[in-house]
Image (cartoon, rainbow, N blue to C red):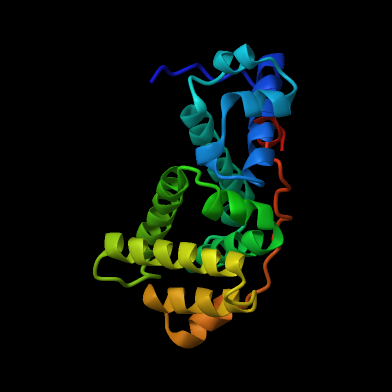
Length: 221
């Protein structure tokens, strides 16, 4: 597949690329990715069909870029939590809660992640890598005690995604967020009282990003 260079931030080309991604998000809130066509996207974006190929080789490339955009939005959302805390367990708890709260607060984001047919592996790979770094740092500092950090990372990442899906489906209430966060901290080796205290600790959560997402807004925020 041909790789088209990403447009420079702030340029007309970057704004046009964002228009295509916005159109794709609008359409994916109505239908599945398997039914998405190039003409649909360009029509929704108010562009001629040929414009698409200046930015993406095909629909798969557009969807991959959108999955990257969702992960980048999540990374930007939780970055201030990392900056304001130095305890790996507190960072893990805050990020877990922020991530799950965002799925509750922005149902459309849950649809894009879980229901639209996006290549979710791209989002999961980035999320797992970030969590693996957090778990490794917690082990290094003695806050987490797990026999195998890679397995522990897989377990907490899977649990986070599973609860996110159940929250999106309405199978569990938002009040489950703190309880689940505490159980994950226990899995990582914290005693129950300490885990529950961190899971309920006051946190300056950031407002969830509104849809549609745009690369330009991420780069200037």
